[in-house]
Image 1 (cartoon, chains in turn blue, green):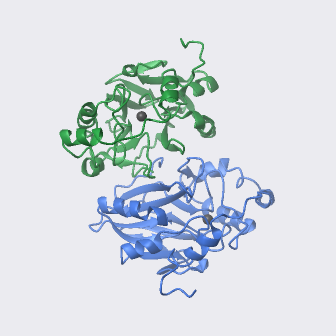
Image 2 (cartoon, each protein chain N blue to C red):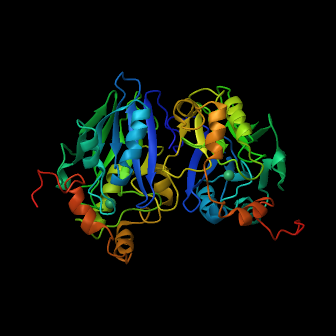
Image 3 (tube, each protein chain N blue to C red):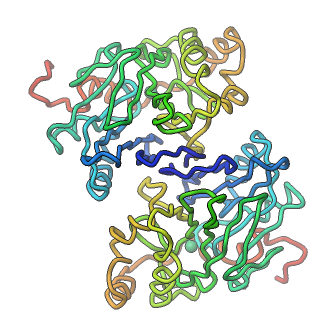
Length: 252
Length: 252
Ligand SMILES: [Fe+2]
Ligand SMILES: [Fe+2]
């Protein structure tokens, strides 16, 4: 639950997929006659749930976006496109993945009068981005940052696969996320302990990894001794093509 | 995540316990020098997580409240009291349970300048209450209703144990919850599909059970064919004494 994101035009929902502990985010501008909406990090297994909610709320889904090429679950973007033709998949150009629309630093993705700005936050993967709501007074306040696996609540994503780099992750977080206003809400792609939201100020003070100096952070990250990611060999190839391996456009 | 609850003084967090799919709610008045806080429906297994968060946020926990005597998990209220002496457990008088403070319809529970009003919503159990934030403009807007198992998102609690009554649940929801402003946020005690929040208007329109007439509702509820509640024989006796069966004050 959010602490205090208020905007009369924003409809916002955080949705949870238990198996991979993934958060999917629904944002819509309900002040616009079409009620245009976007999803961030949809999961293939919960596409029907998400579409049911979108339908009940009378929203029009425009974009199905990813913060990065996930290694732990199959994205729902491809499935969403087959069920709702017209939906555009969105990912960073730096991800090297297929999609309908590629974004990079400074780009904006709009639904009605609400927009997300794109910040490059590589380090967990080479193509990770963070989507941040606009800073103007007519945008939701406080701001919201969808950090993917760059910043997790009291944690961060691993940096030992997918072009990851602990040095780069540290730089990304400190230059692109911790420079946001302290009351900016942090909405991560995952949580494993039942937390849903944090703030920039809170993570700057209490994140057990990212509050350290860079060398200590790099030492922590290189000593995690994590298991090989269970789903990586299935999920990454699938996610490079929007979760639909059997798309005619795919070169096998 | 909430759609739009805004108040500069309210700090609000929804927390999830995966095993029983229980939501615990943390509310605090951070405009007050003491940052007084309360927890609704804490779970024994996540007490340490909750206390860590309360500590990091610099809050002072005053009340550990339950919406009802739960049958699916052991409440964290007793454990919270042993770890933070001074915390008061709160439950409805109608629950028949032990607690430090008993509440009934119309009572208010305050932390700083924020308060919850108590509404009797029996039917899932005989002693169920819903806690609702105040209606005044200086209270969080839109209002928030912590409905326990009376209204779940697109569902409701079972009515075949603990003094349950489908007739009574229907009356409770229609007279005490669906009469709230339509934008009132509904925060239930559980969700099993990854939803976190709904609104009164949304449930009035899309709840597959509670949108029916009373007779149809009663028929639905009597034909659920649910299994005997797995945890009931452990959880209910424990929860009647705040989750601490070995308290010296307990008569065994
Ligand atoms: Fe990831
Ligand atoms: Fe219950």
